[in-house]
Length: 231
Image (cartoon, rainbow, N blue to C red; front, side, top):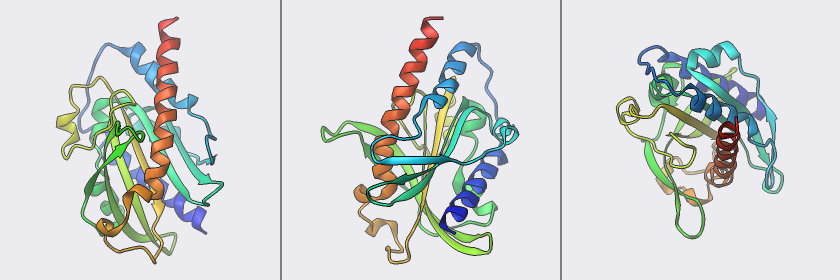
């Protein structure tokens, strides 16, 4: 049941991603760089550390509408802790990918935002280097006839290294020729605090996953860049 709910909720995120498609686009000439960045998504491993995953099918037409040239949608599970979550990573032109905000589209799809949107600065390692800032909030609703509450983290990056979550992404990200966009969400247990501010975020399953996953994303991007340079 939990897996079905995660898949259904991921579908809502996808639908939301198409909601604002076509509102704002950006034409540019660096097609080779865009193709290299998009191809990097296919290089991201299905397993790393204690995490293993299964693919979640996504319609290519839906992703095209969302502006994604490269994308993945997976359900990851930690073999040690048992934590499971869903990640969706998109890469494409800045215009379409910057147009969508889950705080607007998920409520439009019936998921109520139940905590104030906040910003979390994600650290890369113990040396206090940063991956950047991620927005997050809790949403609740009914999916497939079952009640669900989920915690969602999201952000954008021009290079898979520095992540940001501006309040107005269409304006703040307008100068970039391409973008990566990521959504990570997990079920929130009823025993957890109803207010995100009372949760130790450094121990949140999404945070722990992102610290490892983003390293794989950046490595894949670097490999794709090198491969493109050799052509």
